[in-house]
Length: 103
Image (cartoon, rainbow, N blue to C red; front, side, top):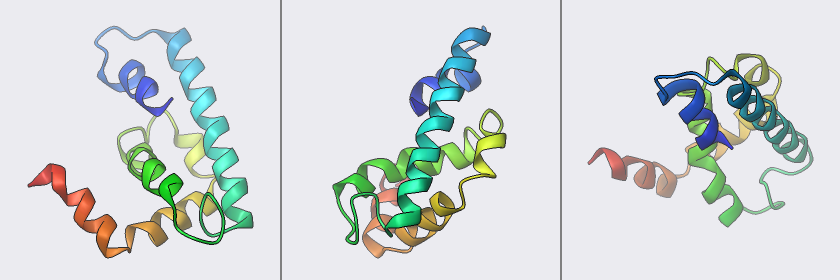
């Protein structure tokens, strides 16, 4: 969903309001589901860091920067997602992995 929102809201030269609304609404829903889950457990699949965190981290991090404008209302309402981003982002292996596209 975040990729589609990025395309329609940010990358596309021709804006499609219906598509932007559809993918903004769905991204909002998914981020709220993540926030609820992360209010119960420190990681998406439970108490331990897992492939769920590995898969979701880059997309969610991008949502807080590249999609900041279309998700401005949502991003202020998901404190557990922000705490999770910080927690996962502190991991040395995550830092090394996130640096790969830049090198």
